[in-house]
Amino acid sequence: MSYAQNPPAPPPKPNTPRPIHISLQGGQGSLPLLKRQESRDITHGGILNGPTQVEPGKQWLPEILRDKSKPDLSDVLKTPALLDALSNSPSSIPPGHVPRTHPAHALQHALSTNLDTATEIAKQEACLLTLRSKTETQLLHLHTMNSHWRNTQARLDKALSPFSPPALYQRLAQSISEQEAYCQALEESFLDEDGKATDRELSEFLRRFREGRKTLYLREERKKRWDEGRVGGWR
Image (cartoon, rainbow, N blue to C red):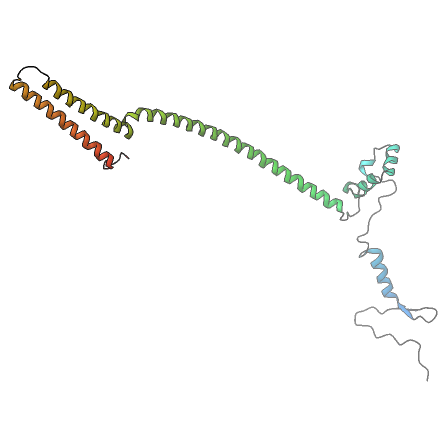
């Protein structure tokens, strides 16, 4: 009983084109023609190579090189950095070609974003300088007002210094000494008079001496209360 060298192909699925088998030499079997066609389409048309590019022609040059002389073009060809810059520049893409993503494009976008950010920072800096100038002006005005208020306060303190608690206390102590000296002088003047005093002179002396001693007692009492802290609002 003899068997075939290769097993038969499985039946095709519904709505699937029937593959065409091509025999290979050396007994290597057969390869479906449909799969080979699909592989060629994938390689030469779309998935691997992307959309079909239109060739610009041999005479096409980038816009930046069209007005250059032959020595300049020769220098560009001899400079790898210039060639790399031209190949990565968006302006060097031929018409009909789809630009591909390149780090230079991302760098260009980053530079554009950086410029926008720098512009915004410059605007904010100008606004900040304006606010700083206004603040300095207001601060100088505030210092001027503070100096004016200090001068006014000094003049006010000087005008009210005679009525301050220390000045009043000093005046009270001085008035007690003066009243004691007045009463003593009044008593000595009455005793030093020659002759006998009349009733009128005696009554006048007693009245003046009593008033003097009364004033002295009141002042001494006020000073005593002040020393004891019984005068409200003075300390």
